[in-house]
Length: 145
Image (tube, rainbow, N blue to C red; front, side, top):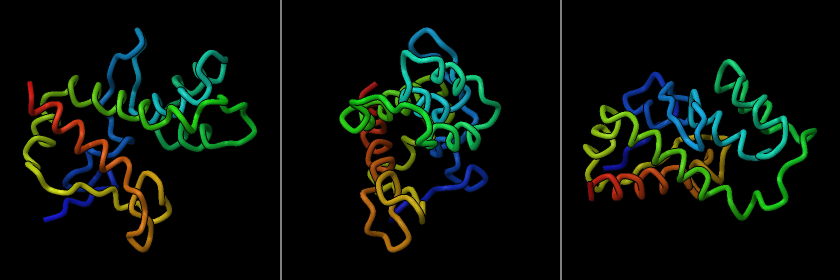
């Protein structure tokens, strides 16, 4: 069986970066993993703090994807590790959703994001599904605790 997720209102909505499961990382509180991830694109600049303070994850995503801001030069090299750090911290912080992730056993987890061919599966299923892969890695890490 394959577990698909996308919207926070669905059964596995807690897997979404938009889910309201905040966490502390780098001595700062992040409202969602989306806030954390987008802010890391501009670490060391005032834009990072601006993104952390944005009200909703959708607004944080929109602002963070804006190419009018100066993206850090090593972003392509570090983005997967940054996503992994945020996802792991989110699920370690909230044991209830950690249990949901662990309950998926060894099932394939896929972000059913029709417009995202990197983090999701894309409209035709040919995407890299990196968020799903990271969730499965985090599931493995949590199962060792």
